[in-house]
Length: 216
Image 1 (cartoon, one colour):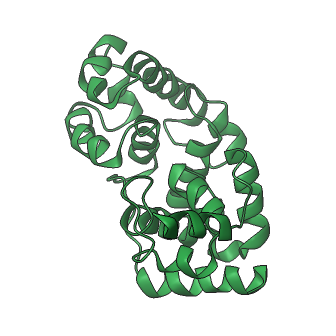
Image 2 (cartoon, helix red, strand yellow):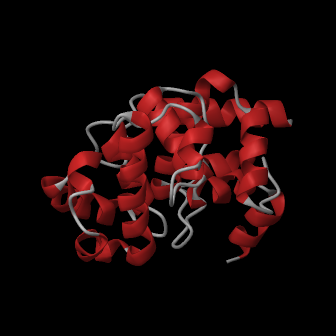
């Protein structure tokens, strides 16, 4: 199977498995999504979804958020990890949104990435999920699966993102990014991986990986 056929198999299988695609992080608007994605760095989505209702009950918009102190924010979000950095980021970006954007989340990669504690991946998630702009945010699941499926060399997430954007049609990026995440969680996890269950890797995966798995 050549690369083109492998890419098509991935697209078709994911479409079949996930015809409707839930967004993993609970939110109600671009601001609450931005905060949830920021909190998800080195934290599970499940944990974030447990913490955001507590935070958003006090402040679900930048105007209320800046009324809280960094310390108050930190106490609430502590279970998500990296709370000193994240609480400063949440407070700081809320101030900037009020000062520069009338309290609205800006709709450009450059403006988002200029906000405190917002990196390229966070900006990409917000652009794709809040504003419908094609983006391909690469998390650990996508990075792992693009390597397992022999579609990227696995060197770093920046290279994986370039490869994904080159291989997959632009109009499918937003769906695929979420479909691959769900697939990674359900069928191709980092630990407790069963090749039998993982139909995509079994069909299109790296030969060396499949040989390694079938030895066990």
